[in-house]
Image 1 (cartoon, rainbow, N blue to C red):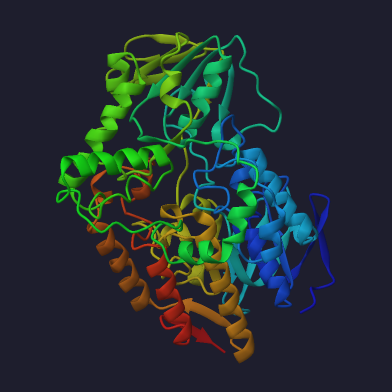
Image 2: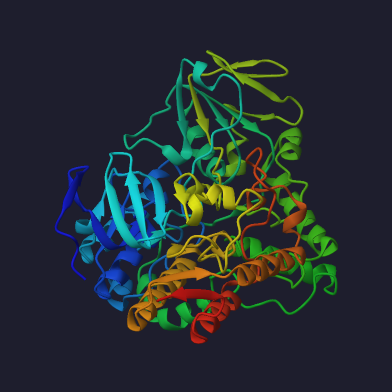
Length: 545
């Protein structure tokens, strides 16, 4: 369908006033969504707040930023030629290499011509009479569209901590998820890092190499598993690429979106020697899923999980030479009840003489001052503060836009008691609104590329289904949504996830409803359910003609 001729200017690029589809976000989801919709002949514009493609991998350019899924698996599978032509250099790609990959994809498929950069979406209002969405940007553009696709990512709404005095600090402040494009040099500086989640675990070792003094402020320690990252050996890429069809199939049918042999034995049934061997082999293999995949009950049984915890506690004690520091770095919650981190030199950093760890459980952080950070015990004078405090995960990237559906009800209001979706794809009261990797889907419990491709394919197929039948709108039914939310909660209850405060439950955001948000049933089972829904004429969705 041709786009309307009337154009509005934004960010130096023309934005059509009327299109078939508006996609918000030019990261992994938005790029593939645009490619698919174009192939279907639908006029599409992508609105992107950043200055280039990449989404999370554009903004999170802090030192040490690295993917926690192996590079060969963290890539698109939709084009065999694309699979073969890009050359990865490391086992786990760094942010600069990932950004080069997405830029390569944008150039290869000429995607930039339909992307408006430096264009933040502020609101989207559903017009019930016209059955269209009115999408507005901070520059004052208004785009009318039939379909609205929120490809805004699960981890893109950066969150600052709730600490008095944030604006009073006279030094320089950074957030890992909003890192400047220009290189940051901490040489000779006194640096404080607040947060020891994934970004903290990655950034701390590199800042430690530069800074004169590094003070790490930790509220809750993380399980930091070894990455054993390395450059790829000659011929390794060719070998991996030759096996891509089987690799992709295994990933799509797996639990986490990465190929792995499912365990067959309980940790409680195994002998101490068997457990030690399995845990040690997983530790040496590296990666996020190796250790949790050793036995069937690591994620579901506290006693089995305690055996894995004991092993991990020993590894931390061996890595950190100071006894008190090792104790402070040792998590006391069940392993994998929070998403673990990948460790490249993390524990070693605390053995350096210029690095100290402040346990905020013992001396709570009270305020940021003009000179640095004050705890209940003392003031730490600093030249720079790095906030590695994460995101308003899963929902923040959707609700920070003022999205209003039927009756003017906002998405934030509809989700006040926790997000409610059907399949993580649509939500009641918001016709023709699709979410990519939304709450209620595997998303952050999976290799995001595998989950994103599955969602984009499903959404594009649903739109094509509607086009063939002359259908105007699609919307989840209340019954289907209620049943899906109940199903997601039941699956979570079989695991150890609900018993630990984490961003999976929104526990890192004061006032946010404590609801377990991702689907814990696995990528393969989820894909099968989505395929069944589509094959049955999109059961659980209602259409208007």
